[in-house]
Image (tube, rainbow, N blue to C red):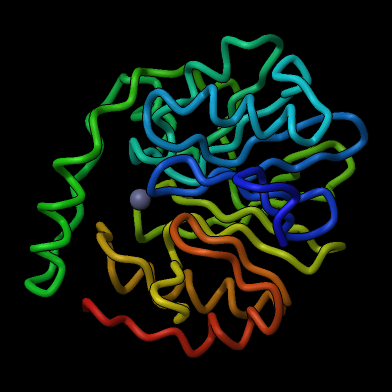
Length: 236
Ligand SMILES: [Zn+2]
């Protein structure tokens, strides 16, 4: 899976994972354009730039940033990366105002089982610098003009959570609707609407993909649809 020691890891053709602290960033290389899906915590821009160099690219090759949701461990370096050049920043419509810094993000309804993890995680996540959003995404929108990457609305984790589906690759990037914890695909933690997150998880399972990349944890490189369909909610 690894492209090089400590470098980006191949998830599918043209799709690479970069570990940006405790959360994942993905680089999608298509027709000479680089799309960055999620950006990690604040201050991870150089990690992403290093990964691009390992792939023979440069930070000036980034054309687009897609944010699966507003949480700062995903949107934290978006403003930094957006400043690299002509970069279009895209986010789910209902999260866009939070990414811009024009609205407060709604905190999750934390379950008793989630509480200790939530306190621990919150302490390690500084707020994200505000970032312009140039395009607000809705369900079914094409990320790229050719439609190789398609938006799947997955409300629940946040109101504007989205996944990115690559039909030709048989792959999906789930954001935090799902996660891999110790080799098990699970419903991710910390949702504003847990029932909605469960429905969104099943929607992702119904895509029938082989490959899934999560916001946290290693990707699933085979049998992802079944793993998503049967994912438990251990902290529910
Ligand atoms: Zn999140």
